[in-house]
Structures are given as structure tokens and as C-alpha cells.
Length: 414
Image 1 (cartoon, rainbow, N blue to C red):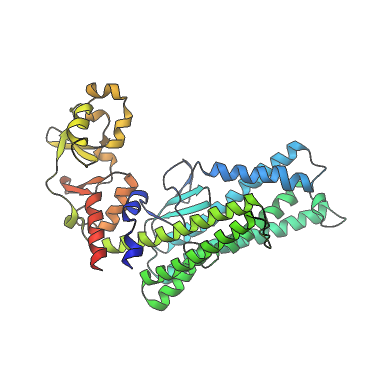
Image 2 (cartoon, helix red, strand yellow):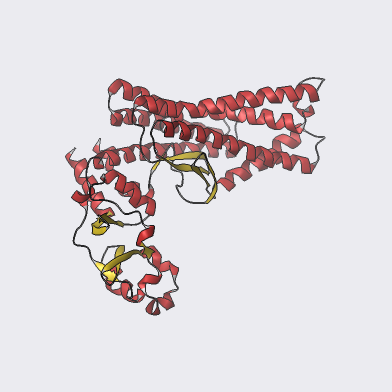
């Protein structure tokens, strides 16, 4: 158990600010698209890659091959429209997860659309097997419903526009888009219901195991093993496809095979990291911040030149962040990445206050706060330490390294 859970705790601490459901998707990168029902929707820049791949494959392959009478302009408009509609359906899939999760008491940080589709960023695990089951199953059901509706509508349009039969080459743009979107959502539902964590089907499996075993960590371990097996099968199939093997529904070819290998690799990493993150959360659960924080806090003056900060503090210590004081008041936090805010030549003339993060912009923690919740805040801020505030006054500092040491000690003793 310890081997599986603590090999990369530093990576878990560094890369995951909140629970990220089903994948290792970026949490706060990219740009904000909208806020729907109070849920922030973000788009990661990696989405552009798969968006272009979908549009390119449709615009150069399926559409011109099946619609010889379509103009080049119509083909590309339809291709880009199909890609946009597909990601809107992915967004609907994720919104279903998020809305059901929020209704079942799971904090929802937002949704991110990225290279592999979408991810709901959660502030914690579901509190019961029932909540986990409902939250997991609603996503594939949403995709299934969208698939059925689009397919039915596409067939209806096709009946009117193609009286001589349902030949794809005779479909109009509306029927073509609806039928393609319907089949894509049906495939999305089938793929996501595979019983491998952290796919939706793996979450359903975990809910069933959790109900049977009464132990979330054991259930997660079992679902993770299933997820890694499925990931391994995807990689195997992808490699054989790349070398010419043909599989029903998947086809063959180097590009399709490499894409399947990439998905399998991604799922394997997602399964492992989701399990490790759960272990980290459980090791910190019930541990108050006051037990781990440092009360003897070293601060630096806000008027200190940045060059002195580098030479006297960063260069002489492995500490990457320092609290900043202005007189008797702590006013901010300065970390190594803040050095990039000014040119190196300007360091001697630039005071620390010019590059620090204002204290009011930081998510401070309380001494009585659960260390697992504090970890989420610390990693979400992407800093190595956070101020601990009690009654409006600074009580200490919580450092990433101290959390890591506690995790390692607790895992060794388990």
C-alpha cells in the first residue's frame, strides 16, 4: 500500500490544487469561457489541438469523400461546426457531473475543457457511495441521451432531404452534422462507461466496491487496478493498430494507433495520480494546521531590494517563499516565480513590495483548519507556503515541505 501511495507525493502536492475528476487536466490554465449555473467554465489551450484535428479530419476525409457535391467552403464550415458542437456536448456531459455533484454536497471548483475532452474540478470526494454512483453515471447518461436525440433528429432531416434513401452522400448539412454528433456522443458514452478508474465507469465501479467493502481507499485501489488494466489494453491495441492490425469500430493506421496509445498512457497516469491524491488527502484528514505550521516566522522588509532578496535569502536557503512586512504588519508573500516580474538588471532598484503578492489576494488558512483543505489552497495558489491567520492576526506559516514530511512519516507508519 505504501509503495503505491507515496512514490510521487511531491508531484501530487505540486500539481494538484483541487481534486480533478477523471484526469490530469490543467486546473486554472487557459482562459475563462463562461459561468453557467454558478460554475466557472475554462478552456485550456490544448483544446485547440484536438479541435483542429477533428475539423481537419472531417474537412479532408469524411465530408469531401461522402459529399462530392458540397463546395469547399461548405465542407470546412461543417467541419468546424461539428468540432464546436462536439465540445459543447462534452461541456454538457461535464455540467451534468458538476450539477449532480453540487446537489450531493460536493464542492465544485469549475470545469475545464482541454486536450482529452473535459474535466470537473472538485473540492473533495463524494461523501457516500450513492453520491459517487449518481455523480459518475449521469455523465455517460447525458452523452447517451444527446446521442439518441441527435441521431433521431438527423434521421428525420435525412428522410426529408433524401427521399431516395438514407445514403450519406445525399444528406444535407443539418442531417450530416446531427448524425455525426449523435454517433460521436454514443461513442463518448460507451468509452466513459468502461469500468476503469478514473473514467466514469471506473467511478461507478468504485462506488459499488465502496458500498460492498465500506472502505473508500480499498475501493479506489481496486478501481485503479481496473483502470490500469484498461489503459494497458488501449496501449496494446494502439501499438498493434500502428503496425497494421485492424479492430472493429477502431480501424487501423499509425495516427489512430498513436492516439489510442496516448489515451492509454494518459489514463494510466490519471488512475495512479487519482489514487495517490486520495491517499494524501486521507493522511492529512483530521490533522489541524496548528499541528504542522511554523510559529517562528521569518519575514523580510517590503523595501528590501530584489537583488538582496536573491543573494541573502533565496541563494542561502532552500526556501522558495517569504512573508513580506511593512513596518509591523505582514503585507504580502514573495516567491521565486515573482522574480520574473522584473528584468534582472532592475533587481537592485526594485523593492520587494513591487513584485510580491498582496496578502489580501492570498488564501490564508486557519490554525483549526483541516490540513487536507489547506493543501488544496496551497497548491491552488501554486506557492510553497501560506500565512496562518487567527482573529485577523498572523499566527504562523504553513509550508509545503512540512506537509510533505508529515505525509511521508504517516505513510511509513501505516
